[in-house]
Image (cartoon, rainbow, N blue to C red):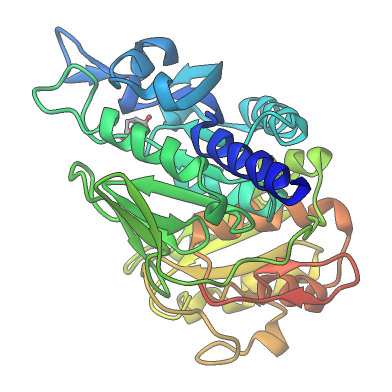
Length: 359
Ligand code: GLU
């Protein structure tokens, strides 16, 4: 009899669970997904609020409990330290809210990579953290935003999306923030993988992850809220053929804390400025060299002698991502070799070791 009663309770719990609504928190920041056509230009980002975007997804509230916060409503070319800090607080609140299963951040695609990578470093594990946007404005003939938002909500409410860091969901693909880059100015298939493979996809509303590996549960970031300020102190210098030496000299002399070189090939720069770079590093500036080439790695001591010069090789990180990581590291006052070690890690840990996983 007792066995029978226990079975009924378990079965009814399972039924309740199956019917339970998933709780997803949406933090909205604007972008094309919230954009509308304008009279004199094509369209403007950040014109609709998140409530209007959710209203475009039929039935979503029937199986998902959605709450939201309008953090900003901008084109993401205007993203920066202050909004990142507001987002940090909002993400932390959602992470601490037992009713929230996963978090979705709507964002313009121009700088989605920068923000997604920043929050991947700040919140490397735990609840799903999903970035989503659109390439066509909300009132376009065939907008991609509603489907992308629905997909993002579905990934955010999937337990499988936990402990994978920040993910980007666009055009039915799931990509890790660490591996994604934007490769097209207008196509809906705009995000590609710099190294590794897609994390998963969605088909017929089903979330499908290709790999089982996840980050260690409870992986705590070595970074915190106050580290975000450092990002504003990192300059970026692009190199290209035929530029005068004096142009580079001026650019280098204006940097006082940290610099990312957006280099060519394997993070190379013209040999004519090697001496200036050495002097800049000797004056206390940290320099990371990365590459405009979207795929592959920038390795140490290939065409440039990093050991002699004191430069840091970005490995798989693009110039934008290198800038975010270097900025978060500034307050830590690390030696160049310690900074290089962090660039070698996927998830740097407090004891100086790192957890690395395939992308
Ligand atoms: N420049 C805008 C932004 O990043 C539009 C690009 C987009 O959202 O796709 O917000």
